Image (cartoon, rainbow, N blue to C red):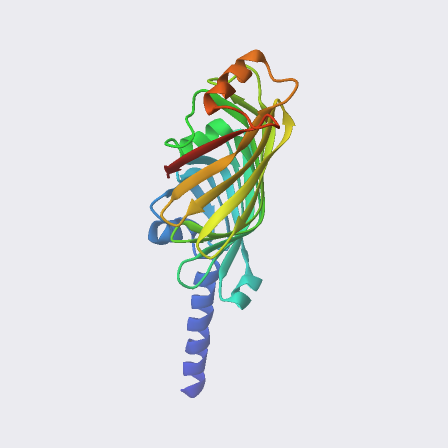
Length: 249
């Protein structure tokens, strides 16, 4: 009788282990997926699976895949390696959910068009009139209640075109991200192009932002850009003009 009970117990444990190992991803999605994430064509398990397409915060995804990272459990997190195709680019990162719901990204790499980003931030970045390609490389990013409490890495914009300012591309620009206890900031500068830019961007926890800096034309700046810069006021002795843009997300 005792032996039979042991066999039953072993069988139950084996069954439960099998259910956990093969737990269908489509069931987990129905139970646990956040409201701003939609997926379709789901296959595989919660440990290793894929989805044909979906959307995250308004950004279209295709060929989505994920793979569980067991070592993330050492840090009391549930971690995955995630990859997806996005319009005109890709997204890949190690993602982990910590205690309290914070989301930790590491080795995040992404590339997309600015038009694709406009679908995610329509109030900040209009889809029409602004073109260019975006490249994101972050060593680390932490979101708590959706706000980036920690960010370290770079964001590059290549071939930036703002039709309201110039019919030709303004050049390439880079933002180096950093964070403090109360907000996130970025140092922005030109890499090449027709404008010499030095600016700082600060994003506060109430989602208000402030972009403050100086801009000066280079020798290759066309007359139309020079005319637009005059609206910023008189330049300093080095030909630089100050600008400030504030708003909320």
